[in-house]
Structures are given as C-alpha cells and as structure tokens.
Image (cartoon, rainbow, N blue to C red; front, side, top):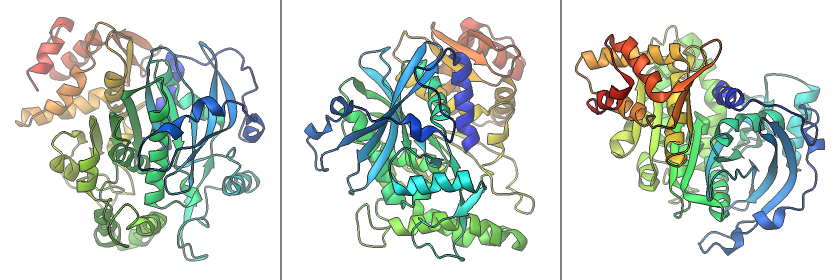
Length: 478
C-alpha cells in the first residue's frame, strides 16, 4: 500500500512541481527531529474546547513546524498532538490552503508511516532502531498480547517530513487543505484505538472555522481503508465526509473468520503457515479492540457491516479486486448490499483466484502500468466532490492502465452487465474547467477532460465519440 501513496505524491509533484528553496532545510530521515521546533501557534488551532458534544474537549498541541518548498512557494505544515476521546493521543500533520474560503479539506489515512517528532518514547525508540539496525521488519513488541519468540514481526519504515508533505501536494494544488493522520501501527493500538485516532483527526477539522464542514474527504487503502471507512462512519455529526476506500476491512468478525478459518483451508499447506503469520499482528489488534465501541466485552458491536453502514452520511466509494487475498472481496460487496447508497468500483475476473499460485496481494488492480486506474478513480471521486464548481480540476491517469481497465468494462457490457458505476464516475470528470494529465505520456500531456475521455472511449469501444458527445454517451450507460 505504500506504493499507492507514492503514486498520489507523483501526481501532485508533477502537477505542482517542487521548486525553490525551503525557508528551513528539508530534512532527511535522520534530521526530522531537528526540524521540529517549538511553535507558538497552538492557541489559534486549539479552539475545539467550545465543541458542544458528549466527547471530552479536544485539545490540540502544536509540537513543531516543517516548511516545505512547493512550486508556489514555501508552505508550513504544523505537527500536531490531538487528544483522543479514550484518553490517548493522536498525531497529525496539517497545512491550511487558502485558495477557497471556507476551505475543503481531506484526511489522508497513514496507517504505517514511522514518525519521530511526537516526543513519544515509542516513536523515538522505533525510529532509532530503524536507523541503527536497518531491516524490513522488527518484533511487534508494542502490539497487544505480544509474546516474544511467538508473535510475528511487523514492517516498519521511517517517513521523512519531506516525503509526507509531498504526498499531499495533489490536494494542495486543488485548494484542498490536507490533514495527514498517523495510525502508527507499530505503536500497538487495537482497532478501537485506531478508530479513535481518526475521530480525533476529524474533530480537529470540525473545530477549524475556516474548513467547510460539507467538503471534507478521507482516503486510504487496506488498513488505511479500514481507517477511512470507519473514520467516515464515526465522524462528528456536523461533518459530511466523502470517503474513498481501497479494499477496506469492514466487518471484523468476518475478517477473523477469513483469516483463521477460510484462508488456511484455501491456501496450499506450504503457504498457509506463512500467510497466517503475516496476519497474526492484525488478529491481535482486532481481538484486543472487541467490545470497546459499545456492547459487551468481547463483542463485535461497533465493528460490523451494519454498524459502518449506519454511520455513513456522505458519499462513499469502495474499490476492490475479486482476486484480493488480503481483504476478501466480500468485505466490499457486503457493504454495498447493506448500504444501497455506497458506490463501488470492482475489478473482476472470469475464474476464482488460484490459491496454488497466488501470494498475499490485493489483486491485479494494484499492478496496472505506471499507476493503477484505481488511483485515478478514487482521487477523482474526491476531487469531483471537494473542489467547488467552476474551479480547475486536474484528473490524473495512466492511459495504459485506464485502457486495460475499460477494456474489461467493455467486455462486461457486451455480456449484458451494467457498467453504470464506471460511467457515473467518468461523467463526474466533465466540466469546462476539468483537465486530464496522462502520466504515461512522455512528455506528460494535459488536455481538457472531455477530449481525453472522448479519445480513450473511442479507442476502447472502437467507435467515434466526439468530446461534445461524451456526456450523452456516458449518461446512456447510467
């Protein structure tokens, strides 16, 4: 999933290329702590104490600032410590974009990024160890119910402030204020604690008087997809949250059944043990969170498809491949069946996944050329809803990836299946101020969206579709 957010960074970097000199040096992984200076900006952010709700007052502490160079000039990110309703702390990275007033905002779910600027000894210890003993995985010693020598290792990678800032650039160039919220998987939160991390981030956005509560987005994939879909479901009532979630775990009772019963029966005996070891740290975090979002101890109350469905108030898109062996395809299809208003884009195949040859993967959808069509469609879903009408929108794709995906969609249409979900998403890209950037082209090409879609659809459907006719062509397929 790290590749997914690298792709989003790449889109933003090219459309609003980094340039110039920072007002403070951009750190590398070893210098992040030095870049976090004490800030005197806490008071203007810490205005959530006036929120009138049943949760404890939200407190916001600015731990420091990081200034990153963008093409338009240096931009200051504030490094935040937020109080959680369960008494813990959440950490986030925020910059306010003043293109619009009030500003749309997006919460970027960052489940795994290592950070070292929090002043929390856990973060410091993990960061120091990764510098001193570089490795791909480490003992999950802060995870719930960890047993040395028995529990599986987890991956850890320290993220630089520079890379994190760049990952938000696609939204910044659209005038959307980004809030990166860190799940800190390595720090050991169970699933209830992770939900409270997202809740704290959304309460922060709720408290900002210059953020439009009707234009708040949230996006993430895999464990970040869980963070996104649950963040949206448990968001403060005053926010209308638009959610885009790639292959999200939704129903944790069903996830446990898949990981502990179904998957070991499906996988070859030679792989079953390795696959189970991969899931073991997740299983401990799932079991440790039961009963903490309501209901009796050990219950799945709060963690079911029905619970998520009941909380979703804004537009929601899930994207999933039916050859996903990490998060079952049924996690998304069951959500769509329970929540008729949830949108879905699916990558399907004519045969079941071959467990004899597969690894643990989210399926071929994540391996399309340059960057996957799912990235174009998910980010486009947010841009279409968060950017005000009449403002410029930059949709991004890899032409080969979109061609491959739509070739499959045409095949399904030829069999009599509805392609309404895809047609609806592409139709949203059409406006006089919308453009498409093709990142597979060399050099990069940027043309009006209606022209780009007309050319792509004409190629795939082998007919002539003019830019002026694209909207009608898509509408007929809704």
